[in-house]
Image (cartoon, rainbow, N blue to C red):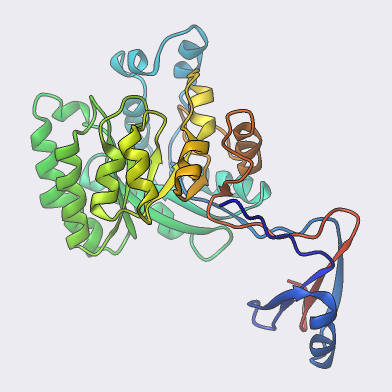
Length: 351
């Protein structure tokens, strides 16, 4: 995490099929590439790989403008949710909209994400909270594949307890285990399963049961963990072998130690805490110094993080000690320093 590789006077050799054939010093690639009849395209400045946004909620209906107005007046996230806003407001929107409407809205958002340099986007469901509506969200993601950016789907049925199940939260857990997970798996709609492990949402025990069941269906695991209040979510993520634990503004020292001794990535979302008006951010420097792998993501969603730009997240991270030596998404950066030319070498066609 402390090393940032910078290649000066560098070149990228792209083969006819569009795959990168080699990356390295220009002089070492120029001769073999020219022998293959390559076209040389000069890039004056900095050449970066595409960013990977590892945490978004991009399939939604409308932005939660009433939530934003209340937040500007000082109302807290928890108070907004208790008044019927928050995640459940987005649930009502998704349930009202057709798959075609959601697809058109999401396609426009993906275009904006791509313009900010993001070429791979993880998108979660979690605004449907019924079998039909969760499948609808995930099917929207599937329908938008085949064009940039690359999409990775995560099933987040355990995002919130829907209004109709508030008197019986365990009934909703049974729905997740007995109907939602089998349906998502049967249709092959999600590579990952996530859950919001947070006091007042899903307990550590409930989260464990959902994710252990998802693992039996062959899904990789992720967690919304320790966002506003500590719950042991980071420790649970490590115990389950999750690929990531996300948010972590309220992570404990035990959670930091657990992540540092594991391969679970700490995905930090500085835009979310800033937009929620929270002074506390995830302790990136302590996580990195302890030996944890740290990534940044946007958490792009309709209510608590409207930002689409990973470079903006990196900029926001600097004053909070998040950005300087973190990875942006999961892409490590290499570039030519400004003032020296980076050569993009292609074989046969423009990339």
